[in-house]
Image 1 (cartoon, one colour):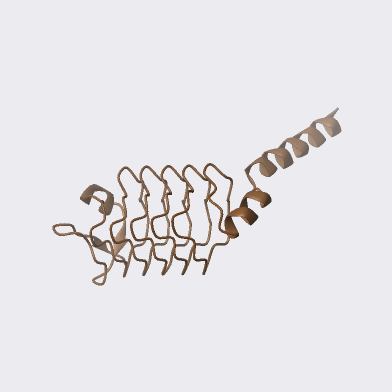
Image 2 (cartoon, one colour):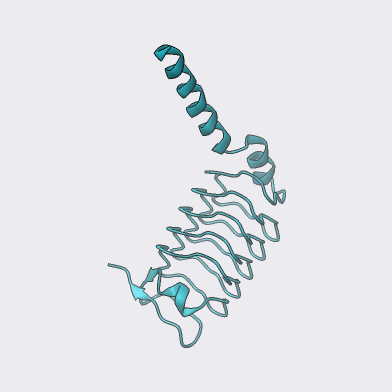
Length: 162
């Protein structure tokens, strides 16, 4: 009986893990340039991709690599981008409304005119990024760290990373 319980536990653990893994078809389509709202793009690699004006609303993009990509005017509203890497990317006018960006690396990225209304940025690193004309507030910035090269809308400030 103990043997059956162990096998059942292993099957349940494997099934639970599989359910949260990325959807290979979703990733392939999105890497090819397709919009993919609500898709499971967990740990997808979009580095160096030129993908402006795509729709990734409510997509699961946790731990994804968007470094050095160009995704201007892309819709990430309600997406899970937590623990993702957006290093050096271009996100002019992108929509990050109500997205989860906890512990995301935003270092050296360009967010001119991007909308972060309701986004959770806690623990994010924003050093050297450009948030000129971005919709972001001081309460959000109080949960992140940056440096003297971080460009923010007038009247806002960020704590220096240690």
